[in-house]
Length: 96
Image (cartoon, rainbow, N blue to C red; front, side, top):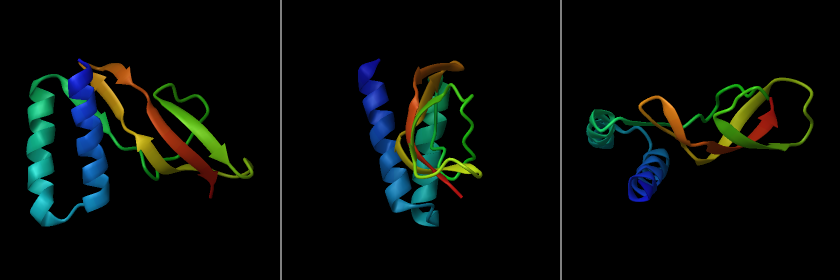
């Protein structure tokens, strides 16, 4: 199972770095579809609101915690297989 998690980690980093250009979006969608057919899914929770009740991520909070907390950087994606968490996301959170 470790090799597939490593592949998903690398694909998600590439997807984030390249962005959602139309040229590459189709390729990433095909990869995601193939992973879904194998039961795997991943999410990149960048810019999502952060709550301390989330169990799918490990967060490092930077700065003041008063205000709305937002995920500002993703180090590792959330990876699931058949709706079970295989890898918790690793993120950086800041007040916005």
